[in-house]
Length: 226
Image 1 (cartoon, rainbow, N blue to C red):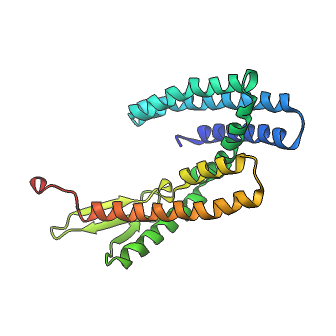
Image 2: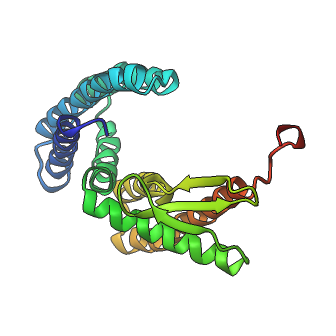
């Protein structure tokens, strides 16, 4: 996230989505729920608009910048639809609320980020050791144990940092939102999540280990580059 103000804005957006979900599920005030949901989508559009300078100017990522620009009218249009023509979009609004509640703490709370990153690092390290590799693990830029290091015979270091995204929290939040937002017995939804979430996490550990080994061992480097 770009900064404290943007983090706070993200929490406001998620809180508005949560309010619309609670009104929709626990009250019979459908019109009010739709109004709050429409407001949430408009705030979401403003949130993406606020991120455009960060992606384009600071990160110089025109792909992410273009995505943020496109998200602005898309979110605004979703707000228009949920208020005027498509009350069924309240289900999607509930899904976004759950996604935000699951995802945002991992992006905005440093202590949770540290626990998550160090846990992923430990599990990826365990997997690589089981495969016969022993990379060094050092403190990353954030100050906690999250940087894998391979050193070749000439002393060159190949470093790979572990990020919060390596935990699969983005995919986990999306799946959680989609599963919990639909109308179905709670036991069935929780059973599904109990199967899917560990699978997503395990696949991300495999992905992290593969990326670290591929970079550290230079598996895909052409001889012409040596």
